Image 1 (tube, rainbow, N blue to C red):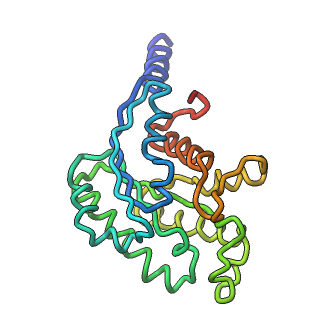
Image 2 (image 1 turned 90 degrees about the vertical axis):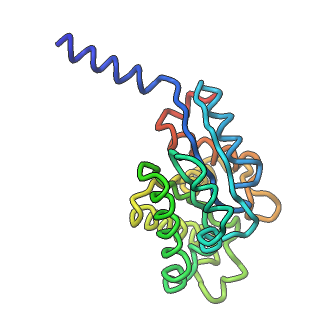
Length: 223
């Protein structure tokens, strides 16, 4: 019985001990807004953890762009990362299945292969983004589910989970947390004026979600 108690105490002690993680963020303006990687590092530091990070976040970039971009590939090769975050262009994963099958999934797989070729132990994390505040009106006529936030958001949720499952990766469910806040705390303004990009509150929400996924710790400890 004493040995069981000892090992239980050891497990709890290790889970609460300070950790250092190395994470590369690959995405576009959704990742770059309010410097999400640094916000995540600040959240980690507030509870004694350390996030060493780099980013590659050109505006509007797709996974297909990153998969052939030498700067992105060089950053992947530059460290033995614990995680590499992959964020697709904000609308593309919510489009029709044929388009996602040809323009999203193959490049998600290519990037995951590149990540694991550099270090087999690196676990990719797919950054699940959120639906636009009033849906994607520019594509609503062609794809009716994009006419509302709920329709667009549910499709993004599905497609990011598929990418994570297909590539044995994690998903950072920022969009799902975003949906919860929209439903339960509508007084918190998550969108900037364009109805798409995150306010500092939206980016903080994302940072807390990434901290939880990366360090596998209780986010309520963050100050």
